[in-house]
Length: 306
Image (tube, rainbow, N blue to C red):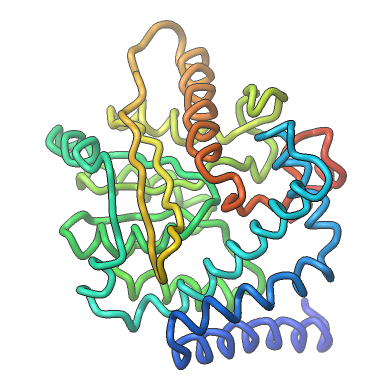
């Protein structure tokens, strides 16, 4: 049972997000973006441990990054992360025409072709850019979206974020015992299921080579695709230079041809997912929001640091 201090701390966390959302909705997007560029360095200064982790990850993506170039790249990651929250807070109040005007996409036919089979599509994405923007665009253009998300603490904060995503037209499934039946039902209904899968939360996934070093990624996307006879498609949503600008890249479906045992095929497809995520992250590594340990050699990895 939470102590009074823990309950107070949880309440303050929720109020901070609600207050940030309230302010973001009042401020024009151009001004909000300017505020982010000034506030992000302060955040990076106080979160030095997170900065050290993102620098490790950035050097995996680009080993030539060192010194001042590495510091600038890691600062851009904090800028991007703050932009993600500000734009997510502002998104529900924007009109459909405003979203359409600032959104571009390449490769949509990979999704529509997959849905013609009638067995849904699994989109695997990294923690990069502003994925909520694509979720709203897809929902408003007639594609039913189910998103699987990590349950946040405190529960009221998770409830608040769930309501935010639901208001954008997405069906939200929290990670947990009900997630597999929920995903299978969504695929059976020919929906697009979105899975963030560049991080293995419980460390029980499939061993893969990811940016030249072994770690694990979740086995769920490949396993669910085989069970539902669906497809797996990698995608990412990138911030552009324009105010509220977003560009989505959708990659071709992965091969799900059965070649061996289920375990062997899940391992192979999960490795293919890792390669696809690498290619997408390399397009804009400074927009990758991976501030947590993600490889066994990272400090704090064994403690499931979040």
